[in-house]
Image (tube, rainbow, N blue to C red; front, side, top):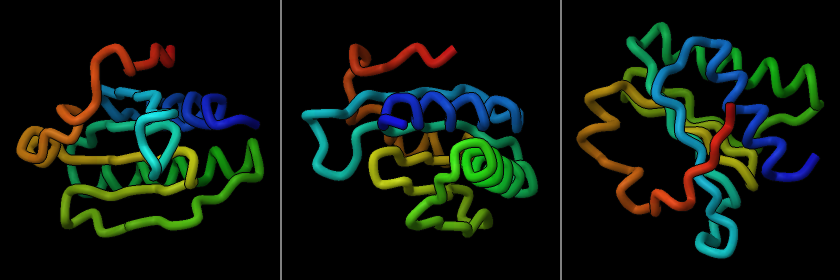
Length: 114
């Protein structure tokens, strides 16, 4: 599975977990950290936990891929699953708005994942 396929699988898993405003960015050639970044919104701390759990479980079961690192501190309202080539940021709406993570990436790097 290549990094784009993994990113799309993660985005679909986040969507299945009812995450909202899912954005996938192709950062190949622009970032030394990852090939793809996914940012999505959870509506509450329990929902944030559920999105992390469900993405991790679905990707693991369907593709046999586990994150190399998982920041699972939902009370911080921003958690990350790091698959090296793909990083998934699950954030509360107010946290996403405050940090403006997506402002560092260009709109033309946004990938249609649906």
